[in-house]
Length: 356
Image (cartoon, rainbow, N blue to C red; front, side, top):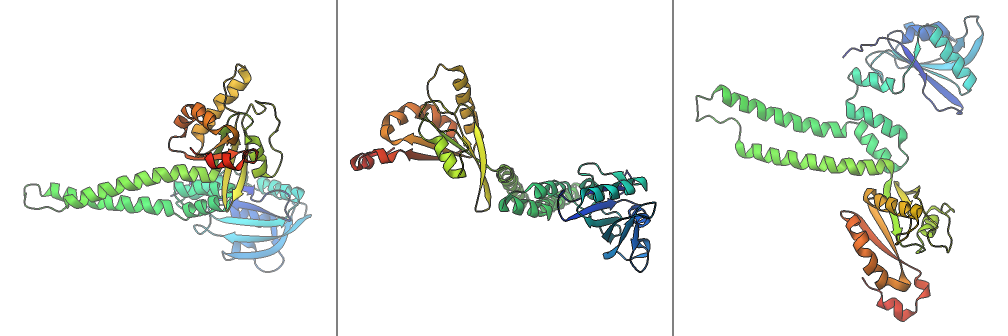
């Protein structure tokens, strides 16, 4: 597939502040434009070099001033990330040097790349499909081992291959059914096995259901699995959040209704990111602001995958009976974990009587 836009683009491909900075150039004139600025220490000019080579040399200004000593890697279409002629200029990481090289490239005929344009060109040139292109952004943004594995699997085409296999099987059956239509006057002929078609339809339905479920799981892995900490006021929700984060994230006091808004933070546990949410205590109140906080508590419960319900051990039965009608309807299809706090205030005989 050919690109509609034949501009040659350039952009800094590395984060600011590192020892090395990389500038990527892609497009029909990428090698030619880079060669205008780059003088190899020895050997042929860049335009005459073979692909997949690394060349040491200098970037010069139009006045002949040395901007930096660099390494330039060379890729020729279609064997590059974008499917176009490409170069990568590896400079020292100074922001001044990188900006100077970018300005020289633009003066020589490049334009600044738009956000995501390299991956867009890779998609339009058939180097990857849409799901793989989306996975590139997920890979860059991955903040845990689980989200990294998920993005890598998708970028390698794991998701696409599964859909392609189903599509091929459907096309095969479609062709057999069309063949039967062509020979419809011969009723004794049957090219498409009906039972096999029913099995395929059932299998596709299962796969689609599994993929729909994997979307919600994958979304949770990418953004952090949401875990809501709920309960009455002063049962220790904020204390638990602080203990999990190992920092004083939430204000803790003996005053009822201290937490009035949602407080969130993430923890990486065994390669998976969990997003813990401290919520306002659930109770009957006439305070307008606190009531708004309680409404947000129920909203966060609906958005969470896991709910930690904290209960004061000193009044288990009373609190459970009073709150379960309010809380349990919001816990449908959620993983509900009940935590008993303040058990150190109970006598041994009282501890043995705690049950739900």
